[in-house]
Image 1 (spheres, one colour):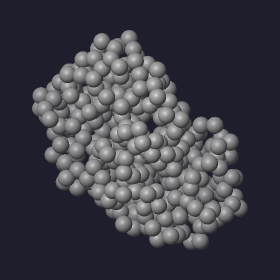
Image 2: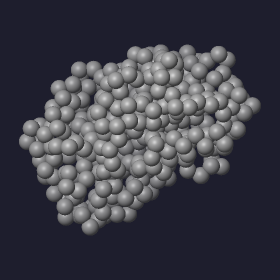
Image 3: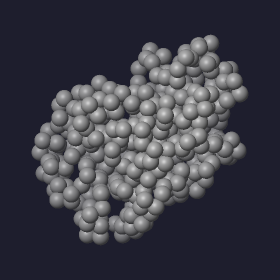
Image 4: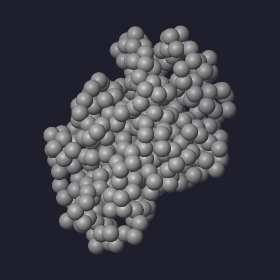
Length: 369
């Protein structure tokens, strides 16, 4: 297969409800949809880098630049015998994993459609129905968050994740536990603390959390290892893990007991699978994280989460959780049992609505033709 054309589509999509973390509050989300064309077929990938460098140094602007000016040229005239790992072609570019991942996802979807085979089967997935959780941001009032927790529990989500930061943690978790004493609950700090907060973080052990996600610096392993040795709650790493070797180092240092794998963060589905394989061999549970993706990225996350080592509910919520109108049809729907079924159709298994892409489009450009 040859990639005949590669197009970038920059979307700006309003959120149903603002989403706040320790980084700040957002009311909409920006992503890049990557369209790879060959033989009359179109494969779709997503770069969920957002507009500002908060979660990552990558933004939609940097990803556009890197794909257009560096990555796309490596695809020109090249014959592909297999869907991946395409990201190996891009090793000459240091970092910029989200940009690389978006292209690899699009090529993988394209191969799936050409073979008449679902992406999740190509990746080696075995779970045809996956458990899913929900991520809830910081609210103006604790009562507002409690209402959202109640709503999520009623919809069947199998795990509740809440964002925390200093002065929005102990009271919040205590109130949730009073109302939902047994619900699977985790806290995500997005690097809001330091080791100077150790005595404070020890108090989280009282809430029987599944894990605390990325409490310390976004690029740290050493301090997380010290924290994990001092608390009972499992530490889960997110931002710190950008590659297979990052995961290996974290495991060797004892920096975490659980791993959040985001394929956009680690450079694509095949790098994500390698980290999954390492985690499974080490006996470390993993789950699939989310970055406010549109339905395109969400569909790719569903495919990844069918791999056998993804034993914990991920952040693959229903489309309606974030967007009134998604760019895929039908939207992602969570069952009353809190699960998602792996779609049987070829590629990502969802139809992308080109009219909706145009509706939310900020700019688009063919970077390879």
